[in-house]
Length: 88
Image (cartoon, rainbow, N blue to C red; front, side, top):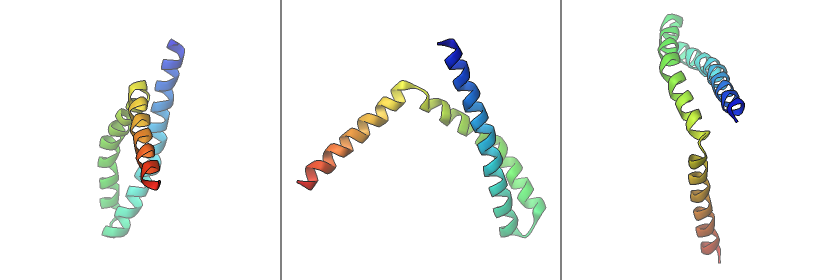
């Protein structure tokens, strides 16, 4: 069990880093295109790297909790039931 917990943290950390690279490149390119300045684009992307990496990791870890998944499934089930009742 402990090995799986460690693995899930490694996976979450790796996903955080790789997503941050993709997202920051996107932010840099969009900022550069909007401002016409590569240095401003780089500044915006650099600031964004720090804040969003931590936010993404925290978000990712919440989804690893069974109670979060059960909460989402309960809501989905309730919505599904309402939609079926309206369709009758």
